[in-house]
Each structure stands twice: as C-alpha cells, then as structure tokens.
Image (cartoon, rainbow, N blue to C red; front, side, top):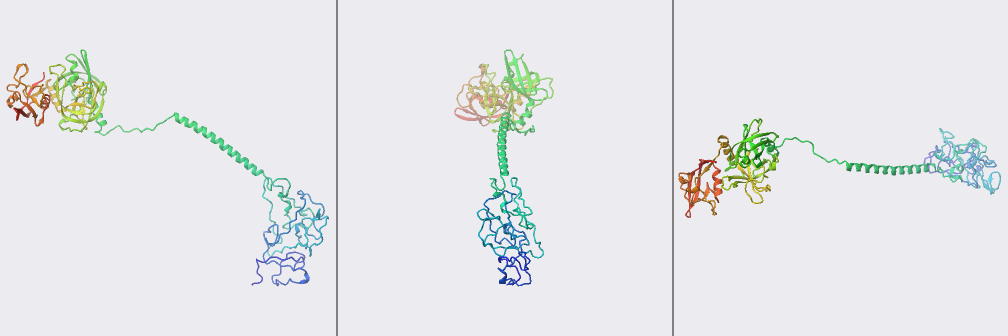
Length: 582
C-alpha cells in the first residue's frame, strides 16, 4: 500500500488537544514528510490520529470538518427553550473556554480528560443537573478540527443554512459576537452562526416551521379560480343558448349559385327555347261559339297552320286573334280550311320579326323517338310537355257532329304519350332537333270518346298528331288555292260491314252506282261486294281504315290492293284520283 496517499476509508480517532506542534490548535495537519505513526507516544495521552483525506471545503453543518462521517456531537435537550434573543442566566461557557455545542473556540484547546463529576446544579446548568448546551457530557469523546491543507483558507466561508425566506418565517436568530448564548468569548468560527435551538420548529407558538400564509393564499386563489370557472361556464351557457335561439329563428338554407342559362340543343329546354318564338295562341269568337287553340308560324309572310276545328267557330263573320309567345297580339283571317284533314291556315298582317318553325319529315319518325309538345292547354300559353312516339299510322276519325259525315276527319296519325289537353290542338309536335313532325289534333279521354278534344277530362297519355308530311301538302294547297284535294279510288263503301276488311257497297249515294263509272276503281276491275283486305301489303280491318290509308297519299299515287271475291283472293293496281273539298 502506498504511503502518503489519502485513505478514504480511514476514520478519525480521538483528537490530541495539543496537536503535533503543541501550539494548542486542534486539527493541525501533519508534516508530509513525517511518519504517519510517529505520534504514538504513550506519555502524551491518547494519540491523535490524523485523517487521511482533504478537509470538507463546504463545511457541512452541523458536524463540521473533516467530513460528513465525523461523529455528531451529542444533542442536548434543554428543559426549557428560552425565547429568541433572551440569554440564559449564568455563564454558558465553561471555564475551559469551550463554547456551547461542544466546539472549542479557535486557539483554545479542549480539556484533556472528560468531566467525571456527577452533574450538579450551578451556573452552567438548568435545573435537575441538566448541563447547558455546549457542556460536554462525562465520558464523551472530544474532537478537534483538522487544519486546512496548504492553499485553503483556515476558515472557509460560512455556509448559509438559514431556512428559505418564507413569508411567515421568524426573523433570523441574533448571533451576536459573543455566540448563540449571548456570552463573551473568542470570535465565532464557521459554525458560530449555527444554533439548533434557534430554529422555528422549537418555538411553542403553534405555527409551522415556515408559516401557513402561502398555502392559505394558494387555497384562496384556487377557490377564486373555481368560482371564476363556474361563473364563466354559466355565462357561456347563457350566451350559447341565446345564439342558438337566434340561429333557430334566422334560418339560412344552402342554395346553388347562378348558372349559365344555355342548355344542350337536343334537351327539352333547348328545344323549347328555340321553338317557343314560333308558336302562337289563337282566340276565336263567332256568334255564340268561342274557343282557344294553338298554331305555329309557317313563313315570314304571316301564314299560320292550325286545326280546322279550332277556327270553325269563327265561321264567315267571326274574329280570330293571334297572341305570340312574347305577348304581341295581332288579328288574323282564315286563308283556307279542310274538314276532311282537320287542317286550316290563317294569316296575320303587319307583323315583323316572325320566327317560322322548320318542318321535319314524318316518314323518318320511329317508335320511341323523343318528342316535345307545345301549346296552350286550357288557355295556358307556352306550355311545354315531353314524351315519345308511342305508335305510327294509327287510324283515327274525328268530328261527325253534323250527322252527314261532312265534318269527319280521317287521320293516319302519330300516337304520343306527351300530355296533350284541350287547347293544344293545332300546336306543333317537335322532334329532338326542334323540327315539326306533327300537328297535335286529338286525344283519347277516359270516357271513351274519340273526337278531337272530346272528354274534357284531359290527357291520359293517348295523344294523336297529323303527320307533318300530310299537313305540309294540305297547307300548300290551302295557301295556293284556298282548297285541299283528296285522293280517291271511286267506290262507295258499306260502313255498316262488321267483317274483317272494307266491303264495297251495293249502291252509291243518291242512287248512283257503288263503283264510279270511269273512276280509278272501275278501271282496276273492282266490283260491288268485293272486300278490300290490304293496301300496299298493309292489313285493313274496316272502311275507316281504308279511307285513312288512301288519304295518307297524294292524288296520282299508284296503289296495290288485295281483294276477296267469292272466297278467292285477287290483287289489283290503280292510280288515285282527286276530289276537292267542299
């Protein structure tokens, strides 16, 4: 083991009161070159063992140097704790110069032997033989502080052991120059300011060591915060309820923004936008009759096409007014009309900026094609409905109120489910390219009536329109001549025949023969009693259907007919003749 090096596991022994140099300073450092065991002389009393470590530079209280492992001095519990700053009676420093708490004053050696006399009452004790603080007990070992090594101050700066500056802490104990007990003596050392009996916990005042002002203040602040939170919550609830009530009253619903007005050209909206400027509403008055219908502009000269039964109430002296989609009103006059086709043409004068509707081709129409109907049902102008073509070449008859059959119209019609109601008559039926493909003329009502606008119950999805190809031909004839021509085969039909087909009658009108002499039928070889079953390969089930099929053609057209005569089938070909309407 190396000598001269600190032994950290060494512990101090009893102190030599004189020290190695005999100058009376306890705790002197040995000579570095001397033998550690040179101090073991028996004539000098108990040998003082020098600690083999550096002194405690921090002067840890209450044990003092050399280190925290030094034995603590015995703690004396006085019978009565005096008030701070009040000195005890009698001297508190023994005659040997040792100050209170058992720590010798600097430069004053402690006694060589402990006090063995029994404790007695005297100036250095407090009743019942209890020694004062700082009086060594009998047999108690004494220790001196080791001298500071070279380079260290003999007395390190005192360590401030005073309690934290709490608000309720008592004022620092008055450590006068005479020591804690108030007696005289040498200047206090590094532990002179320490007095374990001067601490606040030993005061019999009922106060804690650091007072209770701060916790009470904190508790008060906590209560204030809780109260503030409750009040704020109540205020927030009231404000929130008020805002919710206002919000419930002032409802604002989401809505789409403004969009462009343009629509796809083939949409219903696009078709309507292009077609409405060319559609008009007709109001007719004549005598005791009046009616409302629809028409559309044919050209820039003011010609308007409509149904015959729309203008018929005007007769020869009635009035017809035309209202355009923009609200302009003009008077009109009849150019020509035909009851057999249920078509009529009227004309307005002095009107500019007319918008004629383009005409389509009804032969190109297919079942299922989308259509748009425009009119004034029940005098509701500019009404637009839509649907599809439900069927083609649907034979219908309308009129017949006169009883002689002169007002009956025969139409090979287009059927549609676009809603058509009374007031739509004469209006256009448009295709997906905004072209006229038919003239709305009749509906089928729930009561079973089949006349035009018969049964005022309204549409049930069965509407009929005259094909535009037929309307175009008739309109041109009415504009050019004021009359329309009808194709004929020159025979009289038995309209009471209930069998399948159209049977040629046995006699004609007014006693004339049933087959006109020199007419198309006679030239083709048709005889009385023959039953016509087909026209150009299409089956015919009644006399009305045969008339509809023939009128769907122009005069001069060549047709092939299939006949039944005496139980045998025969085919003939003929050229249609012409007859002017009355």
